[in-house]
Image (tube, one colour):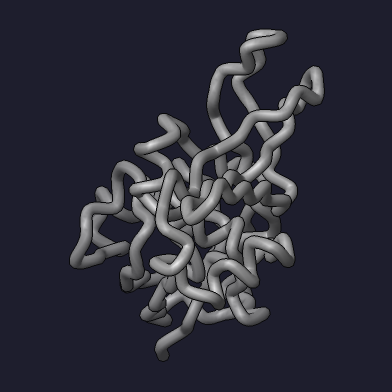
Length: 185
């Protein structure tokens, strides 16, 4: 029996960057953009607020680009303060590297198992699960499996050691891409 689980974002992740005012290391993006045009050149920033003091920081999205080289749809989304665009840009490795930021996904995602209940099954059942990520959220597979199956992480570790939980990928460490696993109960 194949089940499909989805790791879904519930809100924008926190941005890990040092605040120059209060030395906090967390900013919250609210999906607001600032766009500035100087003659034929355009700059755009994603605004984020410090979670402690409320100071604003600007994350560079576009820098000194010719206005004609920017897609009109992107300009419309910037002017409309599109929260979906903010989510896309925060996950863009180029934007993160340019602004020297990291993302903190704690409490910003949930696991949707489709309402399946694994505890009512018989002991001999084999469960095949396909886990899909709706966004690039780095999560430990052991944590996902424990949460999805209603087990402790230690129990999941024991199942891996005994060979009752197998996958083509390494289940230790963090993962942000789709994977499958088989659980023998």
